[in-house]
Length: 273
Image (cartoon, rainbow, N blue to C red; front, side):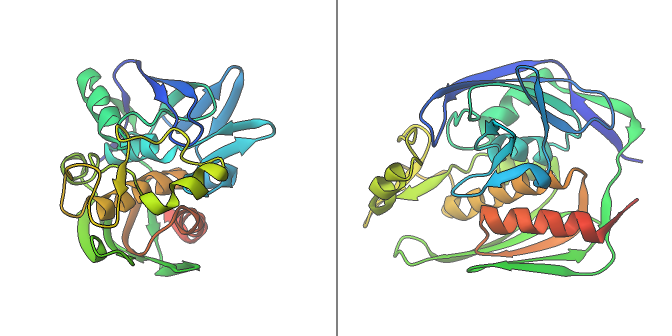
């Protein structure tokens, strides 16, 4: 039997936000069984759930009333990838720190303090039938399975990227090795337009891969690092289902908007075990 987990102690990470460019700090704290992942800003609480998504332009933003918490997907990806069911995320600022643009700093910090197994069993969701969503150029399918896995395909009209694909299983070991270190990326030709739209204002060579016409801004961690970051984002956005998922996911050109739509569909179609 699988048991729920939380983190072994509290940890804090800080830095600039990828899109706002403002300083932010998150402190992760252990939480009791069946409490899920909850953000806390001052006295306000916000559950990490697809119902609270208020924006999906280039990142996933949670909100309620006047509360907004941006770029939650990298931190949520780390929690989901390490099979952490319960945690409180205290946040100072309006955006989760970008750190190095991947989920690896969150994973490394969590590994240092360890995990705490709780006495309650995990309540995984299992699909009764396949379901699919389409949002623009994004196609996502979730099929019944005994485990969680992702097949991802990306395509960019750029000679350095083109068409890429890969398969990733849902084990924490595989996630930590194959997915977590993949950094966010953007094209040099988009920078001015993004910043005019109040996006990517905190992006830099320290927290993102910039793709120029004929080169990357630095050495890649994987030949298909951009594909793997899309998988990282999907891990994060599917955390918004609120429970572990037993499904085989096929993602064709995934996006935050499509990922969240799939999270909603899974929560509506799946049954608890």
